[in-house]
Length: 173
Image (tube, rainbow, N blue to C red):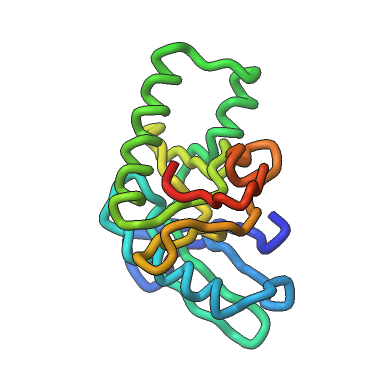
């Protein structure tokens, strides 16, 4: 994406030969590095939920931020759709929607809104279980900030209440 690139990483310190997805984000492309680190730390808290891509580790140097994530071997729902000619069976749609709702319920129960849900941010593990990924636009809903007003996300997937920006803001809906 525009903020970084994803690579296949292999853990070499163990005999298990574990593989991970490694995202490298160039700091010079970030407008707010502290906000990015905060978002990464929030994602670390969600490592126990099977519907959220697990974050294994994160570190940085003077040029980049490195994020080591669970490898979802079947890529994204966007890739899956493309390989299927843009069509899914009814049962596939039901399963994916159910799994997405499980993940969203977990995030919302933890006062987090994703703000960039789209097929390329919904990843599929080796069993084709859907997991929510890419937490670059998440926001925490707090007692002091119950509504958000920032217009963000991917234009074609943006919720109407974000896109319209009518002054009422948005939250979990």
